[in-house]
Length: 168
Image (tube, rainbow, N blue to C red; front, side, top):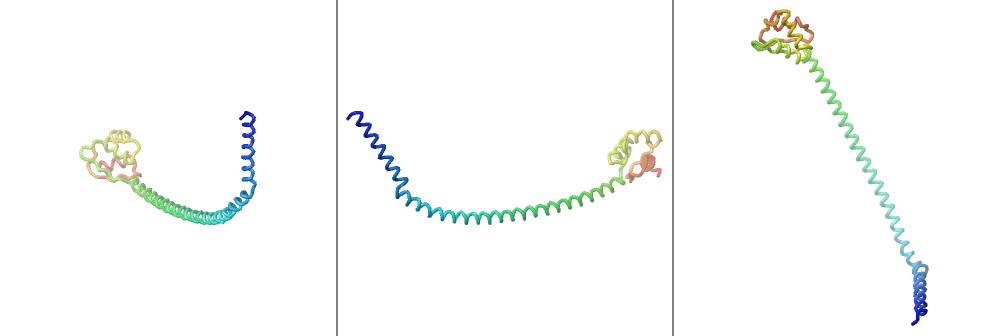
């Protein structure tokens, strides 16, 4: 065969392939195939609508559950805040009771500087060194007695000194 014959043979195959393709796409089989596909689409549309209904119901139920959970958490949080505020109020009252007066124990031979430090730690005086100097300058330092004393916040330095020396 010649070269020209091979060309015409190739063109023939190409035309035949195009003809088969055209018949497949636009022929009777294509119409029947589209009808077969149309029926499942209708069924799929019905299923999709049903799925959408169930999905909506599920989302509504989920939203109700979340809302109930949030309300429950809010109530618990409010109760916790109430309890905390009650505890804070009671602790403030206890703090006031504690800071209004204290009991201080003084051991035998305990120096005035240690007594002053105890009073400062309990908030009865503002400066331990100043109180120690006050006791020294006013002659109270040598007369501090061992024992347990109740010191009130309203007492001034002289009253505290007289209390721990037993002069009051």
